[in-house]
Image (cartoon, rainbow, N blue to C red; front, side):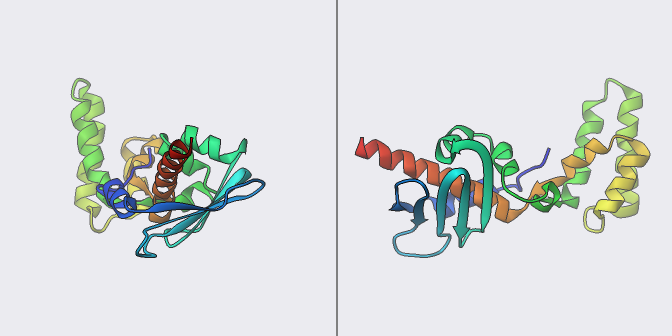
Length: 193
């Protein structure tokens, strides 16, 4: 499962907390909002909503999300609580949205070895993989290919590699911007209701 770097959600939410929303074109077919701090253009972004697509661009990133729902804003409101699902809708190859993080290898192998203590043979596979990683590579020198070699040699299940990735920062900025957008849109619509 692709991870979010430690502290990133808090940093992003803190950076976006003072943003306000202004509808520049509130009516279909293409609705447009700008979201920014009143006194700064730092981390500003626009959201364009059309049938089946959301376009997010500005200081945070430039990304397009595609979905099958005609009402992209209604889709976003339902989906926003599931970051992985929203991020999967961002256009681009999966691996172009993820980054290998060698800092994730050792803690994962250590935790898995401990969690499998009731099955000594299984725990040993993870412990051996951890020893190889520490002896041959380590958290500051290891590469994605090296992690593949260790996982392949000791664990044989390449699905485990997914534990060593985190989302690209611009993908995460896009997600947290959309999260803030939904909060602000909901608040503005509740005050106008």
